[in-house]
Length: 191
Image (cartoon, one colour):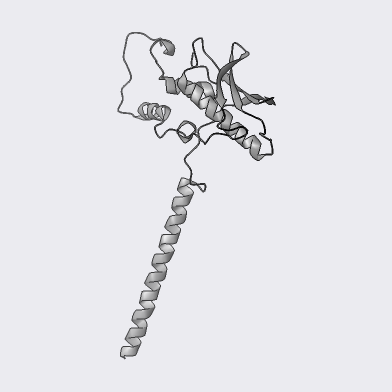
């Protein structure tokens, strides 16, 4: 009878081990699906390239990014520089030779005309700089989603002010430079 009990206990132990292994495997697959199969952080929407060509030792990338009246700002410079490098990296993977290329000129649009924003000097002729993850990865905090949550919150009361018209939003909304730069990079003029 002790042999039967030992066989029963071994069978139960094997069943528990199999169940545990299967549960761990299924949980891992669920996490992979939730995070995404690539395992990388979500990418920010990239600005649209309207014109690209290489002339001599310079690659030129023109983005469909509207510029306001003032200077573009450092964050927009960084964003468009990184986007240009990644666009050219993609073209290089498709077979574009980078022999002889020493710099990348980055253009945006002001009043319908291309305007040089910045120039990216390559570390070595024909060698692109490393990927700038901090600029191209989507931020963890989404300010638009936060506003949507407040609007959806039924505990927030609406104003009972005396005016029935709304003020123009540009009079009381100030966008941080980072937000303005990202809006411009996807073709939205914040003004």
